[in-house]
Image: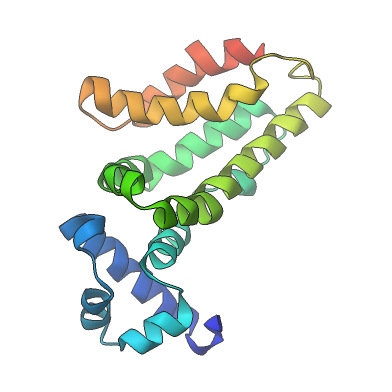
Length: 191
């Protein structure tokens, strides 16, 4: 797929429109026709750039995510997580992501293409960044290499984001995430 035809500004405009439509109508009701109309482009242009709706949605989510685990290295694991929480809280990203992910949650179950696109474009790069962050902590001696909680670190973090909304009816904010890291994640990792 040749993405070079779009300028970065135009691509960002398209991604913003996709996320706006997702928030307005949800994944199932989102159509390439609606994206084309909202962005004053043709469906042919959209299909030249992205294979279809699942890839377009996944790439829009990735592009509009200002916080990435791969971008943070403060020199300590606690510092890395504090920086991630600060950035996410600063941009209101936790709340935005929670709203979008709730909307996509049900759609994922009925759409294996969307599930795979989200894994490939959004989840796997974040897990890779988290794994690198944890490996740096092991290399610095902050975490034991044989810590039994290591393989479950991504599950603990994703679980916190989902559970806060499910159990308390609100997205996980910076205060919740900081407290959760201190009470659950760091002790589990022996930090």
